[in-house]
Image (cartoon, rainbow, N blue to C red; front, side, top):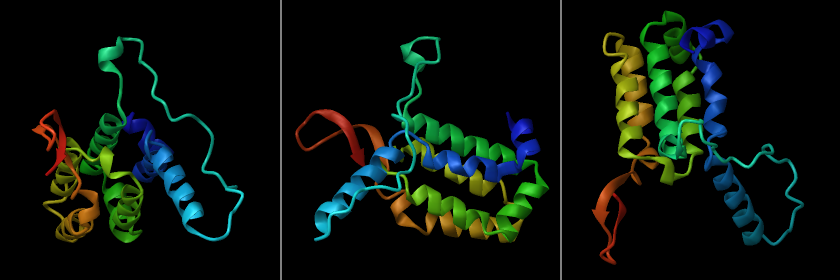
Length: 171
């Protein structure tokens, strides 16, 4: 997949996939409904993002391997990391074309519920790809971790809630 993406345009080819994650579409609809209800003018709600239910089907290997939106985000972040490790073209794009700023903007559009410890760990991997390139490393760390909205609501599995039931909770 990495080689195919490189032939088609590199790491920026993956950016639109962030907006298509299941859950991201629902969050945009909820935000749009909330803004319409909160304003005095009622709009038609046109200019939709796209159709599709946003549901993730089984991959044919059983329901245990079904991809959740959280898992898809982690896989996408890991793929971005893999593409950036060995590609000077992609690294150059991220630095010279403000790729990290675009990437973080798209990540901010995701609902906080998609952010798990694994997703934050994948972001750490992305920043560590650039340990040898100081400018890239600095920009990646600043943009990914200087924006608390991306990680402040990260959920940790298996923590007891106030009601006593085992669930997820903010870190």
